[in-house]
Length: 311
Image (cartoon, rainbow, N blue to C red; front, side, top):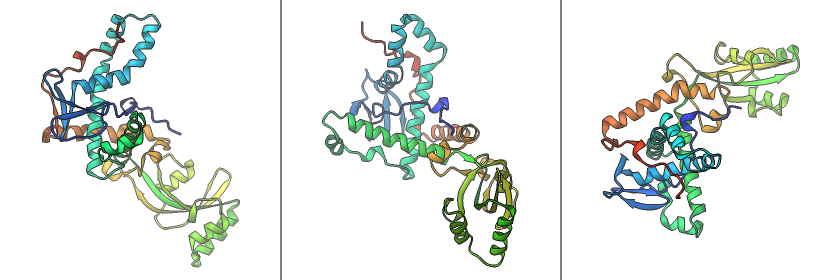
């Protein structure tokens, strides 16, 4: 199974940054509305949602606080940690991820994807837990799910939709093919001959590389709606390709249905890099061009202090 470890999305989504989307010149940090002030200037805006330097400070503490504490305990000096952070442009990367989070959350909200964190109002939050911790976790989980679903639906791969029946011998496969040619129902035969297999033999949409090599090859080469016998791994399959979406361009490929499907795909990381990243980069450029994303002129993420513990 592919573990989703792509650096650009290896973040901990938290309600500390985006607890509730509010209108006007307000932002949300730690679940408390923070006004834009001379001491807490706007950092960027996505649509009507405004994010301030205080939000960025909270995000830095969330992502770097524990790591900084650990390095200090290991004997690293503040100056050494500061130099490492600057060399790796870590604050710039976190800033970009904040923008990603905001843009993808807005995208999800506008298309009805997932549970909108903005729908969780203060009355609901108050009922979830007196301390607010459970509420923050639930809102953070809702946002996390939204973003992962957006990611999956904009990651594409060559895919085929097929159904199959696995049998022990070639003669069994020939018998099934004869039955189908005689008018037998594929789903009924699948239920009878392979009761432990997928319902009706339907494999669903399968991304390139996610099935045995022989089936993968057949999925992208056989004529549609033509049951055929295929041998793979000591078994014989009566295999029928129902649909196929594949090609050189991203538009010709099929998007993943959900994040679970993407996460379980053997080529998930490659598909993400080849199709999602270009899509997101263009999406962000379009948002900036339209004025939907506005970054404060002259804002430098490296100007915000690191979350060192108080001395």
